[in-house]
Each structure stands twice: as C-alpha cells, then as structure tokens.
Image (cartoon, rainbow, N blue to C red; front, side):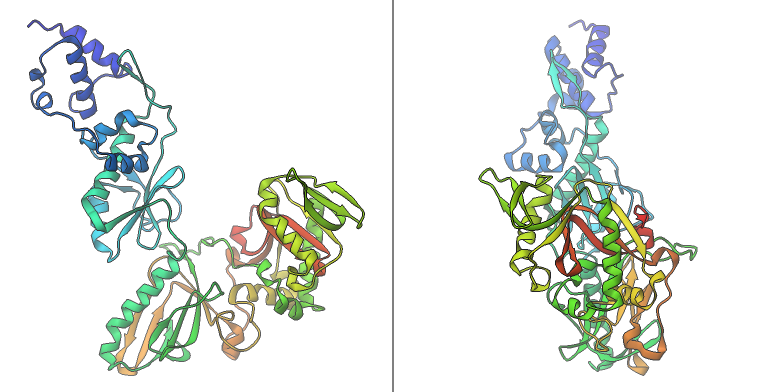
Length: 514
C-alpha cells in the first residue's frame, strides 16, 4: 500500500492542535494510531503500538482516577490507566511543607517516603488541590487540578484541555497509589487529630520506648535544653478535650508536665530569627466564660479588652443600637427588635453571617451565652465584608497587657501558680520531631526543641516576663471571619462576623493599628 506521508503527518499535527507531534510521546502515538485507522493504513506499521490493545478502565480504577485529577477529562482516563503517559514531576506548592528544602518530587521519591514512615502516607483529594501528605498531615507535594477548558473532540481533532504534563502528573499519583498499596491511603480530607501535635506525641513515645529499657524502667528527671523542669516522668499521657496543652508527660499514668506545641521554624539555617510560622497564640473569645469574666471584671484586663473592641466598632459594616431580640420570619429572613418595640429587617441577610451567629445572639438574650449572664439589650456590630482587620500591641499596655498575652500563650489558668491543661509549663516550637535523648548515668530525659518559652508563673525567680523577638510580640487582633462572634462590656456590645485573637506580630501585619 502506498502511504501519503505528507497527508498523514499533516492530519496527525492537526489532531495535536497544530503542535509538532513527537513519536516518543505515548499520547502522540495514540493519536497517530487513530489517524492511521481512519486512513485505512495497516497498524502493523506502528510495531508494538499496533499490537498493543488498550484496555477499558475498570469502574473502580476510573473512580480513583477521577479523584486523582481526571474528573474533568474523561476522554483521557483510559490513556492514563493504560500507561500511555510517562510519569511526571510534582511540586511542593510553596509555604510550609514536610521537606522544606525539596521542591520537586518524582514517583521514586514518593515511593521512598512511603517506606520510610512506619504509618501510611495520605493523598487528599478534596478541593482544587490534590496533596500527598505524611502520616501527620504535613504536605509533601501537590497537584493543582487544571483550570484548562474541558477537552472536546470535533471531527476527530482534540480541542482544549491541559498540557500532556498534567496527565503525566496524574499518572505519577495513580502509580504511586497503586504500587504502594497499604502504604498510601486516599482520603477526601484528613479527620481532626492528625497533625503536628500527634507527630510529637508519637516521637516522644517512640523515644521513650527505646530509653526505658536502658534505665530499668526508672522514672527520669526531665530537662529541656539542659534546664531542670523539676518533675520525674516515665510516660506520655493523653490530653483530653481541646485545652491549651497539646502534650502532657507524667509518672505512673499521672500527668505532671504540660506542653503547648507550635509547629514551624524559629531560625533559618544561618541562625536568623524568622517570622512566626503559626497564626495565633490563642483566641480571646475562649476567655468569655464565667471563670474569665469573674477574673477580669473590674481589672485592667477588662478595660484593655473593652477599649480595643470599642475602638473597632466604628469600623464595622453595620452598627445597630439597642437590639432587644432576634427572630426569623417564615421566609427565613433575620429580623432584629429595637428597644423592645419595632422589628426591623437585619441590614445583612448573609448566610455566612447568620448560619452560626443567629443562635449565639439568641443565647445571649436568653442567658445561655456570654458566661451565662444574659442581657436584655445590646448593641450589635456586624462585620460583613473581607478586609476588616485591626490590631493593638499588648506589650505597650503594662502589666495587664502582659497578663492577657501570657494567658493566651499558657492558658486561662495562668497566674494560678498550679500547672495543668490550661496553665502549661512550656511553649515549644519546632518544624520536625523534637530531639529527645537521655543521660542514663544521671537518670535524665533530655528534650531539645528548636525554640521554647517557659511559663514565668511556674518557674518563679528562674525567669521573669519572657523576651519576645519582634516578629513574635503579641497583638490584639480582630478580623472578619463570617461565622465568628465576640461579646464584651458585659454583653452590652456584640460583634458578629469577626474573630478576636492574640497573634504574633508577623501574623498581624495585615491589620491596621488602632
């Protein structure tokens, strides 16, 4: 049979959207195969490609491939499944990652990581970015789901769709999941509880399991950075609920040392201090319970909080005075009662604002909210747009500012003189598993976090008010968050749509000083 090579190559190029076809590219060869079939040329001319029949993708594998980035490109699923795309390189995605010095990841890299951890890695597929994560949820690398147009086939010509490199990256994820078996778990998202704190707990437990047999299972004196913590320990003990403590250590199943952990580097490789890698020291809203109200009432702490929030009310999207009730109409519109008389439509009907805040405002009137006191009248300050962000330094506000800062760092019980889940002994910071060792001769367990801050309430004369690097100085911060809320002035003023925090300075720079 005579073959018109010019016609064949031109049509091949047309079906590649005018791109120069590359025979070594598996997808390009697949297109060539279809062109030859349409022209009636014998497929034997393609050698092994002609003899290799493409298998239909089983339903289970098709579902997996859609999760791994092929949802919008069903025409290419069979090609990825049959291996017509070589594997590509995934990138770290920037920001905080498990391996900050590595930017590109091959299939072999991922297979190696899957064998290094003693627990399965995760591939999370929710949202628009597919991520490979460590067993503790730290991102290793990712694939952004392509924003390219869907692929369309017209007159046999492929139009739109992403570059071949996208399918090569999907091929990497698919082969990684299939080849590593139980060492990789595919999840939409990770459940709460998997994260940095669990990584440190597992690290401590593993370290202690190696150390105890060498000490005849004796309790050891705990030293952090060679400073005696004044406690003996032989166990890591689970912290119940969601208090300030993330980790607790103890002896004979009884906790006696509490740690708040923040993840991230404090120094770079040269020893230079870095901006804070974590967003907040604590949420001030968590203070608004009976315990804090009784502690702060009539003190400079209450005055500092009230003054800051009062100053921010002028920046709210809406201010509604003398609100005495809240209700929903049959049409589910939110209405506010003014001065116990007139019902008026709320100035915003945003679902983001009222889905969470409606019941909270109801409870403030009924006595279930704001420390259980209840109010008959309040001024409602509604933040209904992004960009609302204001801040004020706490270190400029004397002893009361310092106490609020330390309560947000060490817990609500700061100042009680007793350590516990809400008055932690120490704040530790590191970006990897904290170094743990032992001085067997002296029966000591040694911990060396990258950075730490001791609780001055518990260390007495050993340490006074902690020194903060400039990037870590604590600030009051209020910002728009939609579903959050704040009450102050005994409940006579309420913010809805905003969150109240104590943040390190470097995480508050988006806010305007007020």
